[in-house]
Image (cartoon, rainbow, N blue to C red; front, side, top):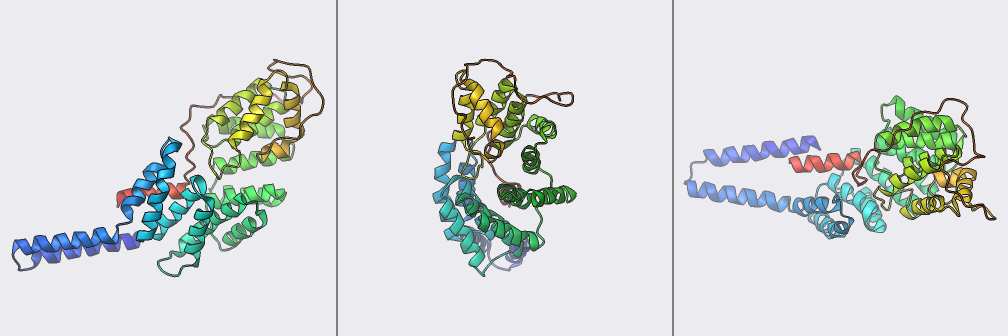
Length: 352
C-alpha cells in the first residue's frame, strides 16, 4: 500500500512538471492544473466522508457515533481504498450494525479487484468477531485457525484466537498461543488479561493477583482486567477493594465487541455494595469463577445471609505468601476500542 501511495505521489509530481514546462499560455496551464486537481478529487471523493466518519466514531460522546455510519456507507460507495473499507467494517462491528459490518467483510473477501493480500488475514480476524458475537464459537475458531495457519501473526489475531480457545475450554492450546505471542513480541494488555484469565481458571490466584495488580496500574481501556482483578480480590475476601475495581470497570466505554457488558458489571457491583446481598454476592462470584471471568453473572447462592458492611469478609481464601502492593487504577480516557491497525490506517490517511 505504501508503494502505491508513493507511486501516486511521483505521478502527481510528474504531471505537475509536465504542465509547467509546456509551451502554452499561463492561463491554459492554470486550466490544466484545475482539471488535474478536479480529477484527483473525483478519484478520492470517498476520502472526505471517510475522514468525517472517523471523527464521529472516535468521539468521546457516544451520541456522535450513529452519524458516522451514513458517512462510511457513502465513502465505501465512492470507492475508498480497501484498507479503509476494512477499518469501516471494524467500526460497524464495534459501534454500529454488526450484520452490516459482517457483510462488508464478506464482500471484501469475495471481491477480486483492488485487494491487498496482506489485508485478507486482518479482514478474516475481524470476521471471526462477527461469528463470535453471534454465538458461533466453532465458526469463529475455524476462521482464526485458518489465518494462523497461513502464517500471519499480529496482536489482534493472538487476542481473539486465545479468547475463543479459553471460552471453548481448550486451555492448553490457549496457553501455547499466549506463549507464542510473547515469543513473537506481540504481548499486549489483551494477551496479559487472557493469561490472567487462565490463571483464574487454573486456581493460580496469587499469580493472577500479581499479574492484574500490575495490569490495572497501567490504566487499560477495557473492562475485563478490572473485573478479573475484582474476582481475585473477592477470592481473598477483600470485598471493598473488589468494589473499587468494578467501579473502575464501569468507567470504561462498552461496545458491541466487549466481552464484559456494562449491565453485568453493574449487577456484580450492586450485589457487593448492598449490605443485604454483599456476602452471598461475594460467595457466588468466588464459587463460579468461570462464568464471571467470561462476562456472565454467577449462579446465585440460595438462602439469605446476614447483612454486612465489612470491607473484608472472613471465610475466604488465605494467601500463602506476602500480599502484593495494590496500586489504584489511574484515571483513564474512555475506551474507544480502536485496534492498532485501525489507528495506523487513520493516521496514514490523515498524513496523505
